[in-house]
Image 1 (cartoon, one colour):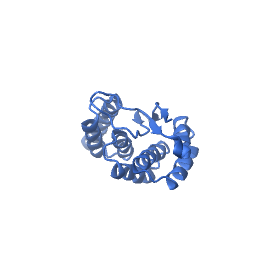
Image 2: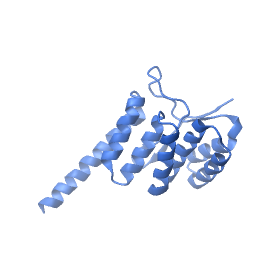
Image 3: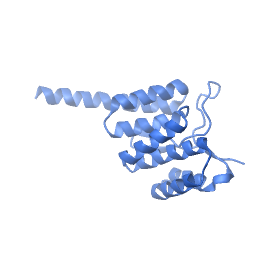
Image 4: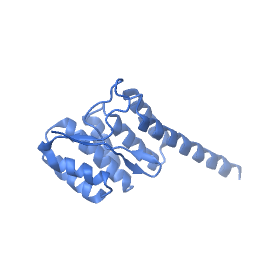
Amino acid sequence: MALLLRSHLGWLALVVALASSQPCTAAEPEGISGTVLGGENSTLADGAIALEQGRIQEGIRLTEQGLKSNADPVKAAVGESNLCGGYALLRDWVHALTHCNAAIELDPHNWQSFNNRAAVHSGLGQYDLALADLHTGLGLAPGASLLHQSLAVVEHNQRVLNRRERTFLRS
C-alpha cells in the first residue's frame, strides 16, 4: 500500500512542490500533488513527511539516507526532487540546484521537479531560467494550478526587478 502525501512545501511566495512518482495527465489536470512512496523504502516516505511538516533538516537527512538504499530510478528522482525542495526552503541554492538537476536527469517527465528548479532559479534571481522551467513543466502538465501560481509569482518578481533596474538607471 502506497503512502500518499498531498500538500506542498512553501518557499516565500513561490511554492516548492514535493515530487510525485506519477506523471500528470490531461485527464488529471492537477496531477498528483505529493509524493507517492511504497512501503519498501519507508525512509524516503518519512523524509517526505518531515519535509511536509516543516522539519526540513530531518526531512533532508531521512531523504538522503533513503536514497542510499534505493535502486528504483523513479523513486530516486522523487527523493532528489524532495531534496531540491528541502534545500530551497533553507535557501541553500547550490545544493538545491544539484538535486533539482539530478531529479530531472532521472525523470524528465515530473513537472514538480521543474517547479522546484524554478524556485531555485528564482531564489538566485535567474528569472529567465525560472520561466523556462515553468514553461517546460506546463508542457508536461498544462492544468497544474501550482505551476500557474508559480508562473504568476516569477513573472511578478521579474517585473518588480525590471522596474527597480529602470529606476536605478534613471537616477
